[in-house]
Image (cartoon, rainbow, N blue to C red; front, side):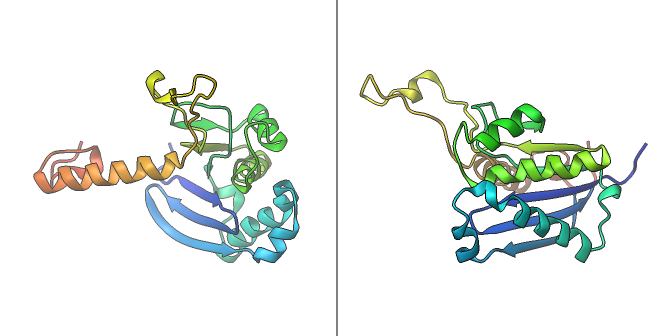
Length: 191
């Protein structure tokens, strides 16, 4: 059994790539890679940024002496996938095909799962996405717009929203002494 899980985390934005490396839940290193707006802007289709962004990830690993073969998992902010419930999903060929085609929308965040999958395949580890921007947990009434021909679609930063909600709940319950998962247990009262 592995006692220390090594996880690479990436988040592709319009002009940045946010990288982090964890050992279990401990952040070891974090870096924002800034991309020249003129350079990424000159690449009309975000897919043309694949090699530039992938090289940034590889450079991060080399700079911080993180061997790809030592990783247990690569996690990426999800791209614009099919509407799905929030959660953690394995990146597979079908997801990659959808992201490459732009079937559900075009945005540089689509590159994260593609790069994660590409790197993970090299060493036989898993690539996952977490709470994609296409998270859809709308109740039927939330889809009503007031105009019958127009249905509301769910598309937002689910990862950020859920992380903020978890953090707020953890802070509130910790200050009141209530337990919220293992990280929020009062001193000496772990799960």
